[in-house]
Amino acid sequence: MKKTLLLALATVVYSGSGWAQKTATPLMPEKKYETEISTLTSRPRVKTAFQTILDLEPETRKDHLLLTQIPSPPFKEQVRAKKYAELLRAAGADSVWMDEVGNVLARRKGKTGKRTVVLEGHLDTVFPEGTDVTVKQRGDTLFAPGIGDDSRGLAVVLAVLKTMQKNNLRTEGDILFVGTVGEEGLGDLRGVKHLFSGKGPKIDSYLSVDGSGIGPITNGGVGSVRYRVTYKGPGGHSYGSFGLVNPHQALGRAIHYFTLEADKFTRMGPKTTYSVSVIGGGTSVNAIPFESWMEVDMRSEDQSKLAGINDLFLAAVQKGLQEENAIKRMGADLTVDVKKVGDRPSGMTEAKQPLIQRMIAISRYLKAEPSLHSSSTNANIPFAKGVPAATIGIGGVGGGAHSLNEWWMNDKGYLGIQQALLIVLSEAGYTE
Image (cartoon, rainbow, N blue to C red; front, side):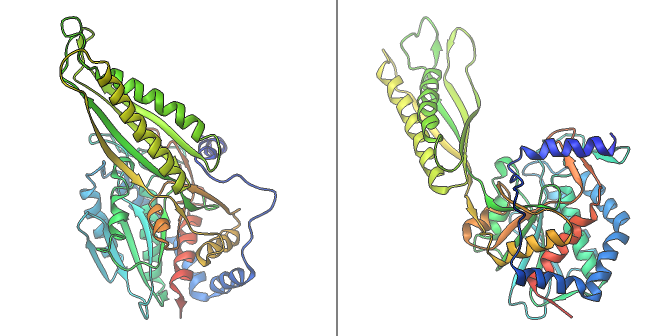
């Protein structure tokens, strides 16, 4: 594809991803943060580091392709994790280890270590085992499942570490360079949940690299609750066993009652969504099914709204159960198994917080237009814990995330690495 066409496609792809819309009033940082970033970028070693990032482009590309072509399906990130640990160790981290759930952590010690700043990309992809992840290049564009989400994020994290090592950039606080497991789908953020579970390290500031561009700043988390609900009955012949409870009928009632109430509930207040996404069950057209199941997704930026629609859903499930049992003519009652398969909290780092103010100043310094928005990323967990956090893009342009035709193009991709470097230095306290 030609670059101009790809840039147009990127606009189409990402305009629907929940990013904030541009406004007539540019987003400006407070003057003191603008001055802070101006001073930081004037430092000789930081200027040299910017050139190092450009010099490292061939090496960063090599790392990017290597990581992309190591399959990392849901709950099976171990091979990629092992290689990523090797790369972080070779880049010069003071210590590298894997925790109990499979996260890879590399510490670069600061002068005092009083603060710890995390720079993180996620190891997993949405693609099942057996997916062809070979990178193909057409023109100036790379194509492969996971090429952007998030192997490029991992390459950015690694490039920042390499750049700091090559230029002996020192900070007051410690920096943790992290590759997490379980960001996607039913992984349910299990990697970052573990980091903040009390079993992980002390974290004072958290920066996730996941997404495209360098202007958008994710400072809010869209929370979600997901369920798999299964109605179970004895099952039998559609004629000979007529009168037995029917799981499909209970499921249908539950969907009907939930949709009626959820439609009213979501028409006011903060954006809240719901989707009966997958259903299944039954064996034959002439058999009363012995089970019927559905998977449901509910989301909101507001935790109270998420709790409210969650209550409506659970009530509808029980109503469907009770009404089906009430009309049975023989046999045992229907039962229902309600399993929560996803729970991502919502939250936000306010725009006035130093981390976000610095990010706005850095984005403007790099000639990008900063914008704030909410999404569902690894940053949801520190948002909910009250730890300053945000998610930034990987640089360049890309699209087709979560599809076999995912693509990424290195259109000034180095800016994404420079952005991440400046945020880490400012948050950890750059010192010469």
